[in-house]
Length: 133
Image 1 (cartoon, one colour):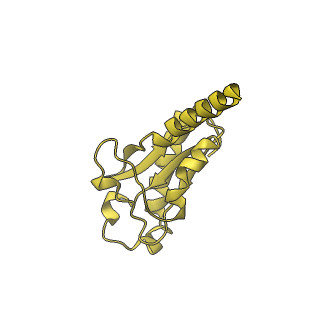
Image 2 (image 1 turned 90 degrees about the vertical axis):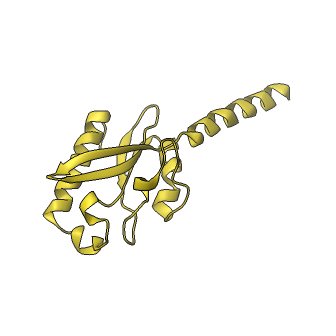
């Protein structure tokens, strides 16, 4: 019985260590005068990468986070990011680009500029881990 309790306790500590990791905030220059920020979670051995696009106005409040501070609320995609990481997925939760802070993401997400911004995020993820995006 002690062995079972010790095993469960060890697994709980490992699980909590994964959950307790703060999101790394990455900011990339994408277009002239424009940056694209995203929260990045990297598992020990990524099997694939996913890019999550929060709905609504697309804002994740990355620009106001202090170093080491985690995103704790938001829509469904933002809330499940740690679960996806535990499944072996490298997760990027994209914020709106620096030139779109006032909204209008519905039409912007259909633009060539958005495709270029996200293409740079994809290139970053592929360089970080050679897995499918």
